[in-house]
Image (cartoon, rainbow, N blue to C red; front, top):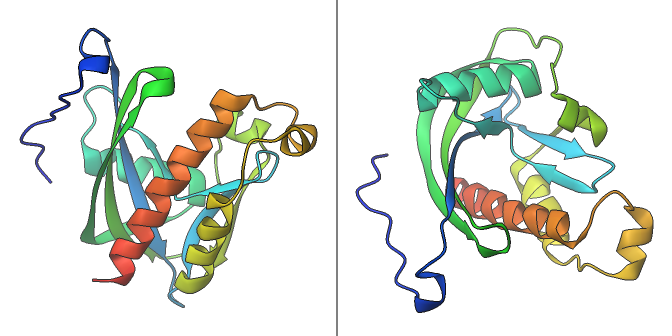
Length: 180
């Protein structure tokens, strides 16, 4: 997946400086065809396994590292799903995510979540594809309300918007995989 150009012709954003972040994401299938999701239970959201590509790291290298850390799985890449580009105006960020279809190789190992992931009580769950899509569709309906804030006092509106943007991405990637 080669990025040929990134173009944003928007007078409102003309003078803004956006940070660029690249991530590797995976649809990880186990031997039963179930999909791994990371449930950030305190945040109330699910995500696909994946994360930032470190300086000097390849996309595939980051993919293997992130899935091993978050799912405890060594994987085989079996295909490309696609790439998403998120323009997060609320935090002046451009986020490019490269997603691959992968399969678990061998036994699962212990996960090694980051402090940030531990702070939201992250855990791995396995769902069939239709269940995973339904989970993200239901999360799409959430709104930032006083009631939601009472249940999730650690998260302000910006954090909520970050999750919502991620949910749009994850749902698009799962539907792309389903339609292939």
